[in-house]
Image (tube, rainbow, N blue to C red; front, side, top):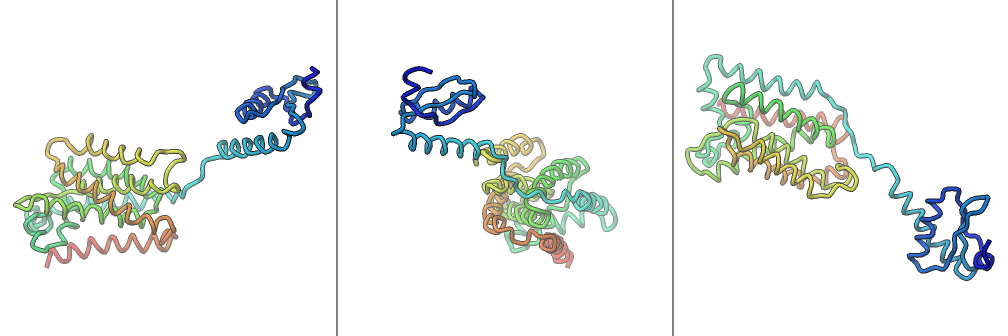
Length: 293
């Protein structure tokens, strides 16, 4: 032991040299005189007696920060996958598409339910909902079922089926209304894609809450990812880009508006999820009932 070490008191010992060197770096950063010795019992940190209390405090704070950094990420709610419920809704959309070809025929259903900008502007609010259940062809239907199924599955996993269905339905309907106001002319649109991009917007918005996103994920990343998906999947031929954009924006809006309730876990118990899911279904049925009057 050197003369310098003999004038110091042992503060901490570790058999791991890397740990002892990190202790030394902490004290060095705080300008606390010290020395490190390799002894039979391990690497030992020495400090002067008058610096002992301050050195212990700094090392204790360092250890607390290290434990917090290495702690497992906080778990956020993972709701049951409930694949049968999701598949059931997607199958109902597919069956309804097939049913629209039966008498009285496609033209009847399209005339009754499409999102007509003029009609919505005249107060036919139900078209904002009914248009989400109509599709032009199998390709249109299939793309919405596949992409929408993936996004809805992810959204249902973090906020539960009830809130997912309600927020996505609201985003799709609001997106259709915005689209109608934007065109304000003889513009017609159909398809669930407005709701699908609404789901992307909701998924981006709810991750603002720490409980719904991965630790240390920057808040802007989900928004950027949502815009990237919009650019990649929403601008192909025969697509209504503005409907997709308005759906995404509406999804962001309803998602952010729902954050207080989601953060407190309102209606996230099984009974609440069932209630919200049934309410969403009734909204669609009520819209079609009004359209067919």
